[in-house]
Length: 467
Image 1: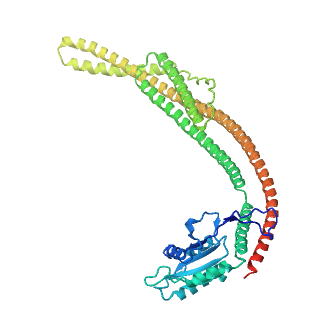
Image 2: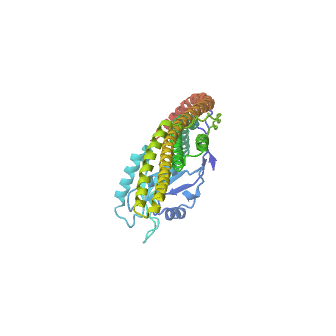
């Protein structure tokens, strides 16, 4: 075994192929082509020469000759030709052998087809000799004479070692040129950094839009829901107070007025608490600070109902009540008139008492109903002012919270923009460094490629001069 040395046509400084040349003949071919049988037959026929199969060679070892065995059953396929490319990459001496010619009489047609296919695949295969063999015939001796003669003649050529060496260098230089050419493609890390830069910018832009939309949506929902809550509480207390007024007997009006004042203050506190809780939920959902609770606004002064003195109205009611009482007294006295004479006087007294009681009852009932109507109108006015104050409270506090949320959101945007600018600056710096390194590498690669292409041209010129 001997390593390949640089030919004179290769410039100094070019790394050698790193191929170890072994003094063996490799028998290769597709499955079911009879490779093992052919190798065994050649060992028996030519005991002075070593014949090995592809599995017996290390990846960096190259034989002096390659016998490519193919079956006469059918022409070569693309995968079969790929086997030859691999086996012959560092060896110039190639011989094609169509096996099993003892059972396939049309092997000449298969041989011609295989020759044409390989010649079209690569010019080097056009000069490849072809023979027919029968390594393990069913009857008779193996038919290996032509193959042995061609192989012996080729190996006896004084230029075979030189040509094998040139072929190894051609493969090596072609691979190096391909590697350097591929290395000049855009740097993978640069592409990743550029993609990261674009993704960071897109993510921040999307996050800004989402936060602004969420802020506007949450504030609008809070404004609508809290206004509805305030109106609902005022309507509820209006119903409650109306029921209380309907049951009021007209006495102790000061207690009723105090109760209305207290309920109005409680409703405003409930509305304030509802606003505070809802805005805290909005702040938590948006990731912002909770707005401070301002000092409560004064509760609208409900005033007092207009239960003023009604002298003339009272006199009129007393007059009407007296008339009603006299009528009732007269009717009662008439009932007793037809009875015993002693009861007539009693009937007059009883009628007078009944008329008096009815007069007092009518006047009292009329006064209570009038006062209830006055108080009910007053309650309606109070709850209307309360609703207006509650809605103003909702609008004011939501507006203050919106201003605070918008400011904090703008501050968040500035922080994120600053962080993005810092990261983008780092990425741009890395991209500039990569660009500088790539430019230097490209310049070095261009110089190296020029040397390698010149060497390949010289190697190919010498290699093809013998054909």
